[in-house]
Length: 144
Figure (tube, rainbow, N blue to C red):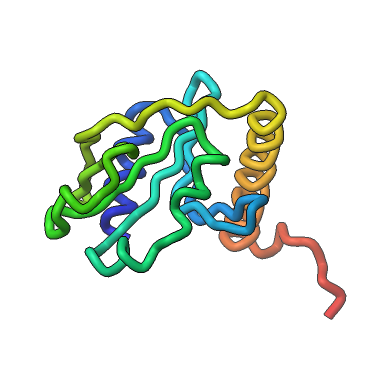
């Protein structure tokens, strides 16, 4: 969570919208799906240890859902273990810094449109759920 918080703070400071734990149509779940002002999608895959990275064989699948793919971790994980063909972000929990830019691999227009709609719907649904939690009298009656 500390790595995630630092990355989220960095993204927000750059006016990039961030949604955590996003289910993708491939069945995978992105740790962070980010949407830039220009409509580009960035996925940030968070790894908290060497073992966490070694156990993950699914990360190449994320490329079909973003324009750029980054790994993020904390200073206790060696930077050299992360794939060179992905971006790299170092986070201390309070902020983060991009140490290696991710290569650009553009989404197809139809994929971008579908992902943009998915991002918008998930963001709206999460906002509504948060509002209902904060103000339960606004939530719809369940009939129970």
